[in-house]
Image (cartoon, rainbow, N blue to C red; front, side):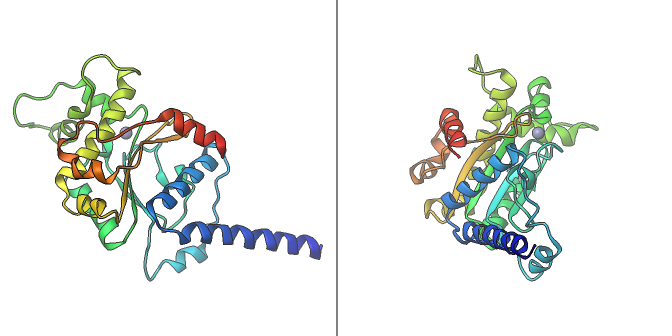
Length: 253
Ligand SMILES: [Zn+2]
């Protein structure tokens, strides 16, 4: 019995050490690796609750030091902490229907990177997004929106510019989701002064992502390069997607 206890204790310490080791590296690519690994665990149903304990809760009372800012949709099927197998204090999550970037959400993202020093920003859309579908199906009003639908229209108006025009490789809804992430990214770089400056200095990494609500998998774009960031305002394709590489990487773990 004592041996079993010692083995269990050893395994617990090892797991704890692995977690601390992963958390110790704070470069954008280290954090991306951690999120990818967490998503693989989530897809496989191997989530951990090790970082959602009373001890963890009390350890965070004095301060938080999240390692990623996630700007994503308010959809109830898209909880970032579950999707990336993270616990308390790990992710600074900004959620709004459609995952759009406006001064309020951009200000929250800026707070996460400038004041809390999170080294990575993830702009994440998701498949079958109702806000994106509404933006596709609802014609833009001719004048300033009024009446009971005005507030929702303020969200849709931010999504519509990202909807691809003409034929697309995948179904229109999914294409619009990817287009929406690109649009949010472009808006983030247009509205913010802090995010482009920190990106140019390579103090933070910025990446796009799409979460598949059926498989649980997150497909990431390429991390934005310094060159891309410097030309963000005139670059039509700010994000490069390589789903095939993402799938290969996921299988490799
Ligand atoms: Zn959504």
